[in-house]
Length: 181
Picture 1 (tube, rainbow, N blue to C red):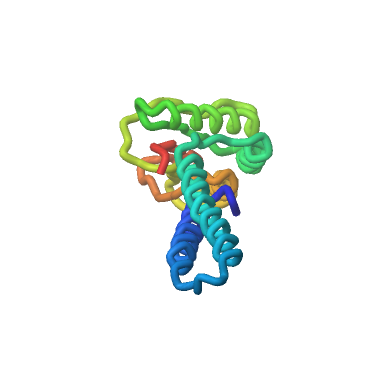
Picture 2 (cartoon, rainbow, N blue to C red; picture 1 turned 45 degrees about the vertical axis):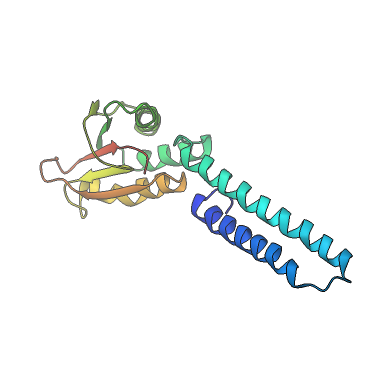
């Protein structure tokens, strides 16, 4: 839960707002409650600091490069291994080092799963964000591999979409690694 930037953003906002409301509400206490005021002032200051810290952590997670941990790599390799007859093409966003590094990890997963390299590996100019799985028809051939491969990528918190590509052979899946969303 704490590795999802959007959840951290919500928690940061709530903590920050509650801390500020608490700080402002301290002015409503009568003067004879000094100890309570000081304890609440410390608590609300910690809440404001926590909100700022959570927002900072969410931004760090957003800026981190996409990668496959060894468990995620093994899951993706297994998804490729389940479809040994398919051919894969791995493309990445030209000039994007982060996309190229992720594409190379996907290429390694294809090699580990199928025992052979992808049919095509190259950089292409693309405006895509995330990872795109292109297939000719979802009902046959490479289309049957979209769900397990897509799930393996999403388990690694890598945004994935799929769509039909009319000029692909039915036994070929095109994997395009675009910029980080």
